[in-house]
Amino acid sequence: MPVVREFRLPDLGEGLTGAEVVRWMVEVGEVIAVDQPVVEVETAKAVVEVPCPYGGVVTARYGEVGEEIAVGAPLVTVAVGPSSSGSGPQAPDEPGVVAAPAASEVERPLVGYGVAEPGRGGRRRRVGGPAAVPAPVVAGGGAAAGAGAAAGAPAGAVAVRAPAVPTGPAVVPVISPLVRRLAREQGVDLTALAGSGPDGLIMRADVERAVAARVAAPAPAGPAVRDGVVPLRGLRKAVAEKLSRSHREIPAATCWVDADATELMALRRQLNATPGPKVSVLALLARICTVALARFPELNSSVTEDGSGIVRHSAVHLGFAAQGERGLVVPVVRDAQNRSTEQLGEELARLTEAARGSALTPAELTGGTFTLNNYGVFGVDGSTPILNHPEAAMLGVGRIVAKPWVHQGELAVREVTQLSFTFDHRVCDGGTAGGFLRFVADCVEQPGMLLRQL
Image 1 (cartoon, helix red, strand yellow):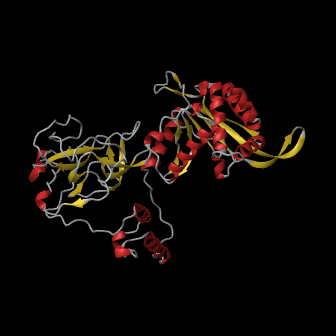
Image 2 (cartoon, helix red, strand yellow):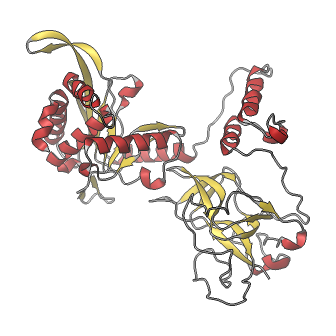
């Protein structure tokens, strides 16, 4: 007899208490392999696919698209086949296990998120008859028919009951996950498309034609503008809560200064004229920040939750603002103080590319101790940003633009930028903040000063 095992939403990252269901990747009655992704969820940090550590038949799934699932709450139940030998070591007790059967070929520990066993996760099957599909337990009490009766439904959960005779979902001839993603993002129903590829395979061009046809179609009659409420969900909700908390709890102040970045830009051109990885302006600014924080370590800190103390961080985990598909995120370069300028540039480039593709992991979005905000990429000169709670400081850099400037006693056209520095006034006074900002400005104007610090 199969044994029904319950898989619950695991802890997906530092400080996260739940996740929102973006889409289900399996249906009730479907046969899944070990470590096969079953649901895509959006946390406050990233969009991730959650693999199930059990292989077998999906008997129930919990939560609708758009619904928030708490960490530790049930996601799916799976009917796992019995051991072929009928004996073997028992699985250890763990949250989410309805019964502890003998180990079998379709069970093993969870390998890791996004890591599928080669050759096992690519194709899914649906059971062919009702006898092979244990009916899930329905919330509210009572036993379900079949092997699923061994598991009690979690309190308050609503299980999706497997049909008496599973007919199977419509088979959509799409191979490329990129095509599926494009269709999902554009709201195109793949089942309504006729594919132009071999054997009716749906291609990217088919989805793009459907989108173009929809755009070209006349808009329905009605008012041009409608009032409405856009719900705060996922990343936007997390950002709103974090910024509100920062604004409410941190007495922040900002100071700023204009700096002549002509020599810094000349140094960058000189470095990039030699063989090797290209050095970005952001990498040079990151190197300046790590040197400045070594001189002013009180700014690489955070105030304790109860406000009774200040935590000084020995390592500089440098966050930087990056624009991704889901909006503004702050990836973190770990141990930035130990990296060379080239290494900083490589890590910044890797994380920026991951942000654009929404491929950042929760671990890459948490644990920052100081933030570098290059808002000059948006074509603006200055800003007074809200601190990235619980960090105590943030350096902002405006666009670098040619301006008239007094240089060596004469008026000249120089490449000038505005630097702003926002800090938690609890960790230092204005003298420290001003000293930090002035040191950064001096390094921008005379980058050779860095040699004295290295």
